[in-house]
Picture (cartoon, rainbow, N blue to C red):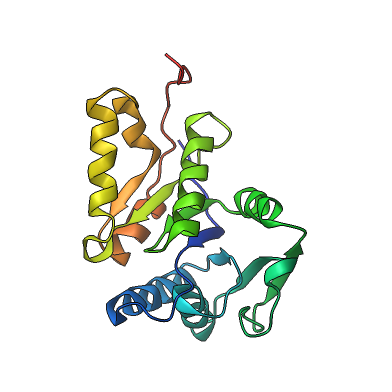
Length: 195
């Protein structure tokens, strides 16, 4: 089987500047490692928070960025005006669809409601068979521990099949993220999601 090819990685993450520094350090490391792999960053185009940190780090090390931003959020104080390419969409739904279309892989760094919504959407699309791309939940400093604990409740109470653990990978550091993506083999998921 030939290796899964990655050129564009969507990173979902916080746009807040008010979070702990260790999250910024991890975002910086991810940007550096993505640049080393010559992977283009696909993201919401924000210039603040972890979004801005990943993009800045990646560009500093020679990587390329593709910011996809809805018209409503195209405000100079919010967007990264240094993106190599920008796509402005009519609304959030179009933005998310474009990110899914362009990206070969998805990484969810720590983030808020928007990050969770994007993560759940790509997981659901994979569950339903609309794509079979890698999804990584970056559980830096145990950020997603409670969410992952809730996932265990879904499995235990049979609201989700055990096989859907294959929908995503859990990584505790950037090395684990890169290793998973480099060696990704698309799983043969059960298409009978409704049973």
